[in-house]
Image 1 (cartoon, rainbow, N blue to C red):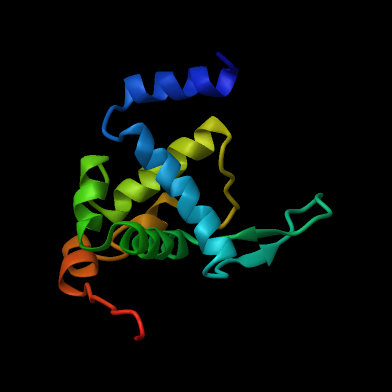
Image 2 (cartoon, rainbow, N blue to C red):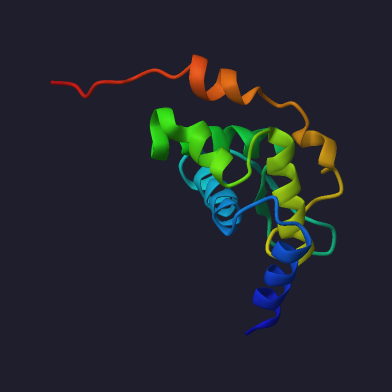
Length: 136
């Protein structure tokens, strides 16, 4: 078992609130935000030559919302809940766990508070859900 896998297992034992699938979904949402939704701004950290795309906590929460609706539709809140994700703060907790593992990076401007109360899950996934029919 490599160091990251070992650290991940230890994390799951230390903080069992989130299923392993929750972590993978947050990583997928990051890619979805950058590649599909074209979110994020180009930033260059001091001392580094290449700019990389960086998302705010709010942008990542929105990407999680949109990806969950795209993949799970009306069941989005149920699926996320089964993985232990009930609030945008939970998304932030997962992000900061991934940062601690070295799987994701943060910038100097990022704060855990950026994930607080970004949206209400019931409103975002249940009340605002719309069924879109394909063009015929």
